[in-house]
Length: 428
Image 1 (tube, helix red, strand yellow):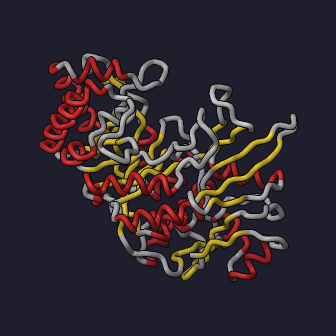
Image 2: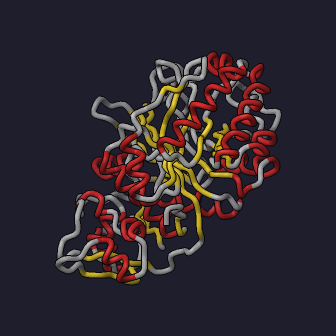
């Protein structure tokens, strides 16, 4: 695997010739739709095919997988165009394997809302160990508020991704409600009712586990929150389910702030089966422009986390989005626009903006001026920043990567992850 950074004089054709790969493959792996449109500083993922196959009349994905002794999911991972095409056709070239692909098992988790675009869902789920359904809410008495999770569960089953039920205390405005947390965790009857309802739904729908995503827990509710997780873990373990807990990115046990104080890494890490570290949102919609997940800041969290939580329990959070800020930034005035990573690159290509790279945060960004004359800066993720995050996860010995979220396409990333790891599928 190589990352090529576009320089002056480069074209999609000269780059494909340089690495001796088909132009079509280079475009598909990097979500490029116009072969005549590249921009300076753009990072392109270069993967060298090891074995290919020309589809014959009567071939199906299953028969081709059987022929070469690989899984159907692996074929889908190596050929992301199949999700959009929906079928094979004679004369089509499929990549069976890439050179130097890793055989190290690894977990990949992705969060999705029920309204995800079906093509993006089908394109992404083959790369996932877990598909986390966002989200199940609840009332103060412990009655569940279920989403329409049918399509997500069907995709999880089809592509052998274990479904995770995400439990959140969201209010009617889709905001985290610490008042709702207070009412539930301090009411033994409500806690028991919620846990029993969760067990019923998980058994009915085939969920693998539950992910507790409680944010902005009041410090006064810390003990009740931890006690709820402990009670949940006891019940889930008895029924054969796993418990995941999402934790805010802390750098010390004494870190103050509503987001952090009730998230006790040591105690929750001892209870839960697995921990999802939400290592993103340093750059956020209402904050000053910076990388969403700068690696130097992430490392500060990891250095603390592994003192309290076994690294083999940790799933490292990765953002699948970026932000576009209007400059000069003035706190309290307006907010940044959220955009996908592919969308950011497409914008840079369209306006011929040079993509720069921050070596400290290991993150790409670019500047531009809009038609009204306002300056902007866009921070996002690309092959370079993802490579840095993958290498960091390996370095710390984490069990997997977790993406918030998979609602936007990011083909380059998924191809990169599938090359760096042999993604574990519990259904295989």
